[in-house]
Structure formats: structure tokens, C-alpha cells
Image (cartoon, rainbow, N blue to C red; front, top):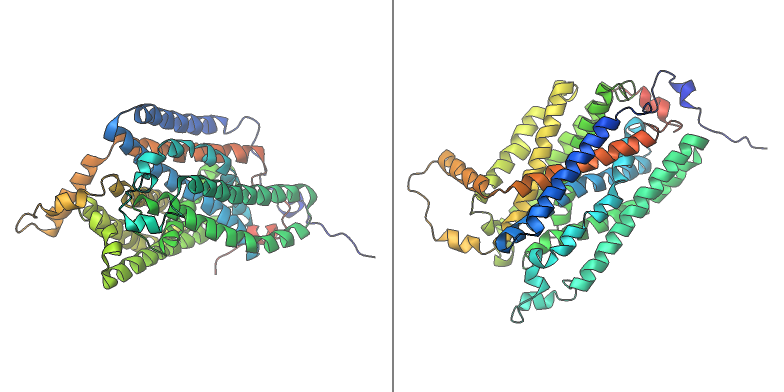
Length: 437
């Protein structure tokens, strides 16, 4: 005779914790975020997609920057969810529902992929309409095929949507039943889920960013994209949780101890992003092969050299010094500032990866223009930064921050519909009483 064990309800574990958003509460914030996001995206699409020539083409590059930057946040939320299950982590239970609800926005990211479908010929025209004399593209023809490209889009999203739906559905089911075997089931399924996730995000990064320059390749590129995506998700989660806490929700569940751990992960993946990008650069520099060095050659001109320098200092040296402190990671304003700063740097990183391909032949034109004699490092940097800023368009801001606002609004809508945290997870008590050592 065996007894059926169930996890106790949260009323027994922590009766003081608010588990649901009150009726009508946060609706204004949700509608404001959604309204702002939709308005910015609609305005940008209206002016960009119906423009002519280079203006229209430039819009699609701006849209891709925003899309890949924010899609990475949603995908990293899915990764975070599966990671917590496969490691059977206790500390993160109170944070996990945020990740589940952010990952649940992925169906809308599929809808937002439509402008990329419309602009595919502008973005990927080098291999969409290949030069018959180009032997490099001829060798990649089996993969760089427009029909196969869209087949792969369907495969990637099918993997992501099924995983996000299933893990969230099981978590919500556990809120009702308290069945601890759900944790064991999800831990087992997280292993193949993470394998499928790793393959799909890697090839999506190859298809949607790296193929903008079809002659260039890097086997580590998918990992560099993932590193930045997971770092930006952690920054987004810190800000999202702080917002909910300011409204009286989760402030007794997500404590300074949890923010400390989120800050440590944010710091770690900022360093990991630096490590992967340095590894890529070092190997390309050392080998000095023309087909590999072209990526950085294109980014030495048009102000992009200054942006590369900005990423070295803004994406590594400054946050390394700033986020290293235990005090900063446990300080509400300090960690929030670090999170906002890293989200902005993530946008700059997406710009650096994508926009130089708008004029891939610009490097040759700029290479003929010599630098001013005696120009200092600061002078070259400020000149390059000004050149980059001069090349920015309103679409660069509207697409990224509009999509970020939209995802935040949809995540808030999902949070208002569900319990704010997994109320009957067997490790909930451990998470609520978590203390950093």
C-alpha cells in the first residue's frame, strides 16, 4: 500500500506571499507596454517597408537587429526554464515562472518574423540571388537555398514552441495537483530538450545573422549569440522582477538573495560573452585567412571600429568592474542600473553583428581614405563614434525598444493570468528560504 505524496499548498508553506495579481491590477502597465511596443513597431514598419531603395533595405537590417536581440531574450528564458529542471535547482523556483511566461511569448515572435520574410531578398540577397561565378556560394548552395531556409524556420520554431508550451503547461498543472513526479518528468525531458535547443539556436544564428555575409563563417558564432542572449535575459528578468516588486508582488518571494544570484549569473555570462568573442577573434587573427578576416575588415570602417572598442570597454571592462562587487549585486538601484546598461550593450552588439552587412563593400571604399596624421586614440574613437551615430536611423531605436516593450507587455499579461510563482513545487520552501553563502 503506497501513499500518494503531494507538495503542500503555498498557504501552508508561506501564507504571507501573494500568489496572484489582483483583478485589474497592473492592467495599465500591461496595456502601456503593449501599446508602446505595437505603436513603435507599426510606425517603423509603415515608414520602412513602404520606402524605396536603400532606405527600405536599411529598415530591414534595423528590424533584424531588434528581432534577433529580443528573440534571444525569449529563447534564453526557455533555456533557463529547462536548465533549472535538469539541475533540479532549488534557489530559482520563485524566479522560474517569470522565465516560463517570457518563453510563452515565442508564438508572437513567430508572427513578428513576417517582416523578415518580406525583406529576405534585401537581407540575404547575396545568396538569395547568387552570382553563378561565385564558387564559394556554389559550394554552399544545398544549405543556402530559399525554400530550405523557410523549412528550417518552421523546424526551429516548432522545437521552441513545443518546448515552451509543454514546460509551462506542466508547471501550471503542478500548481493545481502538487504532483512531485512532474518535476522528475521535466528533469528527464529537459536533457533532450536542451540538446534540441542548442542545435536550433546555433543554426538559427547561422541562418539569420551569419548568412548575411555568406562567404564568412565561424563555428563558434552560435555560442557567441547565445551568450549575449542569456546575459540579456538575466538583465530583463532583474528589471521585470524589480518592477513587480515595486507594485507589491513577489517582493517577499524574490529577495535580495535571489537578486544576488541573478547578478552573479549576469556577471558570469557577461564574462562568457567576452570569452567566446575573444576566442573567435583570436583564432581568426592568428590564422589570418582572407575568408575569415573579412568579418573584422568590414567592421574597421564606417565608424564600426569605434563600436568594436565600445563593446570591449562597455560590454566587458566597465561591467566587469561594476558588477563584481557583492554590494552592487545586492543593491536594488545598482543591479538595476547594471541590467539596463547590459541591455543597451546587447543592442549595440546586435548592431555590430548585423548592420555592417548593409554595405559589405564599404570597407574597400573606406580603406582608401587614410587616417589623419597624429590623430590620437581618443580622437579616432570619437570620430568613429560620431560616424556610427550619424548612420543610425529612427528604425534602429523603434524596432529594438518597441519589440522589447512588446515582449515585456506580453510577459506581464501572462503573469496576470497565472500564479506569480510555482505554488506547489516541492522545492518552493527551499527557494523561499534561500540564502547565499
